[in-house]
Length: 177
Length: 292
Image 1 (cartoon, rainbow over the protein chains, first blue to last red):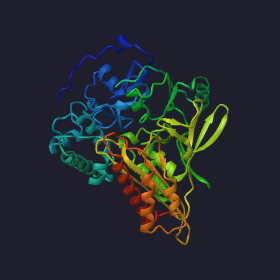
Image 2 (image 1 turned 30 degrees about the vertical axis):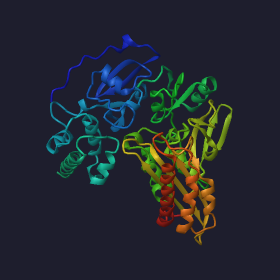
Image 3 (image 1 turned 120 degrees about the horizontal axis):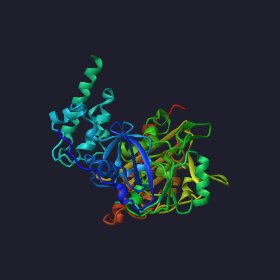
Image 4 (image 1 turned 45 degrees about the vertical axis):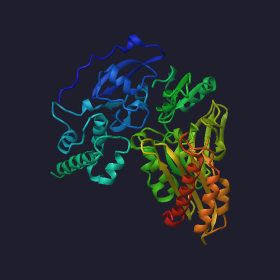
């Protein structure tokens, strides 16, 4: 998968209100920036770091297209201030692949058609990636419950659930072997 | 949506927070998880000059049972609360309210304090607190006071918390040997806030009559509603279907408004009536599984 190349905007030129230095890890990389205190994490990731895999859907805490992992837990980046995650670790969809290899959840989504338009997909992948860290706990019911914060208008969730089950099963096999 | 500009502080101790509040409390907002507050700020319904981030405060995240009460630290994340077996075993109203609250992503960030302190009529833990007659502990530089949840909510986003106060703990009455409770929510499809939700806490005597009954209603008026008359109707009864139906009818009268201008008041009342009836029936029947 090619990563889109977007030159990050220089937010420092456009600080119109109170600002603050922010230090955090993003996809494993230590990052420092100056941001307005009112900048949401989603905006920071997209505009300052060029991580446009973070999608803004509803911008009102419902849809979860903006989901990222915060210290391994899925959260809605449109409803967190960038400055709230000082010192913490954030992972976006761009961080799922490693050395050119897709994450097991990405491979499972491809195999099971867990996406159509792709708009919810980054957030969906991250929530599912966190879910399959504990594959033993997963049932169809618990998967669906775990997806309650990520809305998809295309798939009816069927392929997504199958993808999680597939990746979870692979994960369980790996642990045994 | 972008909030208005604000100054931002991230204190590392409770004392520091209280000092800042003493000086700059009016015009400031306390940021716990931000899952309620930031929505309001993005919509510019709330526009503080100063935001005080509580995220680095130690010692305010706990779930503790004492002789008298269940104490929840205000910065306990909802997902931590959900993981507590104590709630599953002994506090069915809280366990269910926590399960119904928003979604897993919001629960990863939102906090107990944040879900009761803002004064939004849709907050599920606020509803549970009113049903259970919980108490909020408020600290300031000048001391400490306790306010009953049933007195705390005064208007939309308006509470009894003074601008110089920090809510540090929520106390639910300790589970009794015959503790019953449930939480029912008529959730809308694309929104985590309810069309209406109902919290029920019943305390039974050993011979099966109802000694205490607390019923609360979310998102059916300017504040979390305490259906006092409905609860009183049940005291001394055994909670027969006729009694429960009566209480549900009375509770529906407490409904003031629907959360949405498109929803007729009669419809909101009918939904609440159904939720109360169902919540009460479930609370009585399931027996909560309390191991006293």
